[in-house]
Amino acid sequence: MLDLLDPIVVEPDETAARIREYGRQNPDLRKNRYDGTDGTVEGMCYALAEAYYFARGGKTSGLEVYCLSWADVRPDGAGTHWYLRDPERGVWIDLGLERAADGTHIPYGEGRSRAWMTGYEPSKRAVRILEDLGIGVSDS
Image (cartoon, rainbow, N blue to C red; front, side):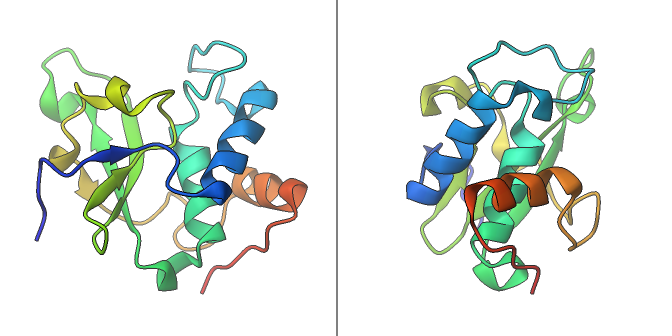
């Protein structure tokens, strides 16, 4: 059951911490349309969440992929926010936040469960992150 008040986690384990640190060190992972501050994970929600999803086993991980369209929740909203849900632990996983407290304004439950933009094949950015970190890519 989806609980809108599930806690937000930004680093659920060491793998997530390594992926986030890689993002901080590689600001070119951001799409050009996102303004971000070097040394942060700002603007990297998609790439980091996707890399973590595949690092954890892809479809067999039990993680659920979510995308929130800001236009669906705010009249002047634009863009999207990508994150994961771990239904077994009852937490939202948002690797694109610096701190969990930064997500208090995000209506996670309003997002839609969906596949990645590349389906269930990892994107070039996800592959780059995982290969550079020496983490096996799983798309099963």
